[in-house]
Image (cartoon, rainbow, N blue to C red; front, side, top):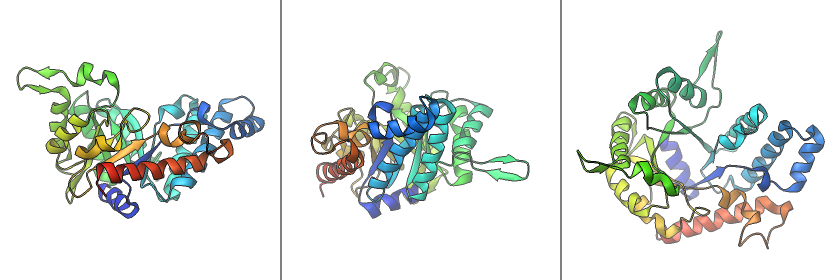
Length: 311
């Protein structure tokens, strides 16, 4: 799967993934009102509004970005209708030719981990039928239960030509409370130890220079990005934290290899809620929210290509 992602990044000249993390406060009133008129003030209306919002944004940016990253919690909060909107969003993005990174951050052990992997990346058998439930292309995985939690994902991904992004150093301010702790026996931090394990987990999933097992390293820690790029030479790095969390193009140089590959940068609120934010809110009204998202992607692409990749 990683080779497909790289092909799309190169074709669109955009190492960008758009995070589809909708909140009802981001959705323009005309979309929300139409959903409520159809379903009442219900969870079904929330799911309908989210899906309509997502479709409009995807239509506006699908020719610009190689991938999208829906965060499943933003859908789960609305129960079954929200999950139906999630499933429909994944399906629609695939129809538009986009690679889908399921931001599920699952981490459990044994049969539970295998069940998560089957549901999001693999297939299940019902009678004589084999079905792919959510059918994402990549999934984010929390590794802090150890190999027992990661290996089932690796196995399912390999069997189904899918990929993973393992949490190594996350972008949130308190990540260091655990991830930066140093083990006295080898003087390595927890996140460095996880990075070493990413190399182990990905060794049998190579496609050219890169493995289907990648890593998550936040843009808010560029010095860590530089270190991790050297440690995980064969892992693609998914970089959250651009835009709303403070990351900028100039912070991203070290995440990329000299050939301009090796990393893909996520922006969520900065793209899908652009119509509510500077510098777009004075240029685009609620009716043109998707146009604001498109402009935000164009600006992000220019920033990364100029200030991170020197193009």
